[in-house]
Image (cartoon, rainbow over all chains, first blue to last red):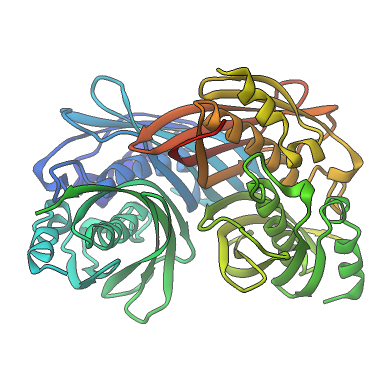
Length: 133
Length: 133
Length: 133
Length: 133
């Protein structure tokens, strides 16, 4: 993968706002990490579902744009399997799983710092041929 | 709905972090608004899917917890129907749509300031009988 | 819509196997009906979720192929909002709801003979330019 | 698992209608098989998405009811990753993946006779305590 792509992904304002770090980006695959901060808490004292989804979506976006042409998310299904509980950070991994024409499927997983699963997601992008760089 | 519930929803740290305002909360129904800020942009210059989802999730959470007992999200499907484009704010509405035992379904919609639809979502919560107050 | 398309949809072996009748097919829109038969029951005496989904899928397929070029389903989310209960037939309606490039979204609804809703679905097809006729 | 449960699952009229055979049923886990027949074809000559979903749903139902109390499906997401193509039969496997209260999540996979994946699904049931026998 072209290094300029990684710099582009790292320039994502929303990812920076949430404090997301890119651990790994390669073709069709991405791992990201987000330290859990007070701003991510919901009114019940747990990590907000929106923050969990957002982390997965950052990984999804980098993995699906890693080929160098713009990919736009069209649909995502998220299953919240366990509360985030006590964890220093959350980690999300996205990986290409299948495709049908320009529609490409990725599966994602969000995990605690002990590796246990918090959420699993399945998302589709529409893969354009518009160059990202 | 008990006013103390609204104050509880407004105490949500993540909703505050995103700048979400509660327009309306009543039994099984919620409307929220979020001014679009630079921090919500993705690397392609659009509003990040995670921010769009998060806004809907704040409405979902308030609507499903409006009955006064804790409801936990178990699954959400989101369809991104159009880019957020140019809009001063995004608005999300969540409304109870059906139930099966303690599993309760809500549909959600995210709209631009001109009312046009950006995303539609369907989510399920598990409705506990744990008092929120 | 070209009449030959309707005849093509009516030639669908699986739709015939389930006894599905086409009530209406027009551009991006379809209504179908299926009399409830003993073969559709599950071991608990209700209409099987697979039969409910299948009916919606027949409507989805006709609506999304109504433009005359082949559309292939990539993803569907179904929410079962109520048991089918006592009803002479089930009716499903599919309607185009949005699109992103060649990925097109349809919403579907399955109803009892009294019009009450049994299931709501959201599905995506990949719209090819391969002529159907 | 009580043998009377397996006999109950095998009494499912819809599963029999589709020619589904139970390969394995144990606690929270089920494998089923369905020979591909002409009645399952769509108007494009492929196996109908409704038939693929139905097979997975039979496995989902047996796996989620294997504990001996009635479980009702509330939501399923299906991703069609590849056409069924040429295969003598389709096989579906369902496995418990997580839970939140009485809402329990299962993942499912539908495969060709060569083991390649046709569809992946994630489904939720509401687990009642009503005895099945």
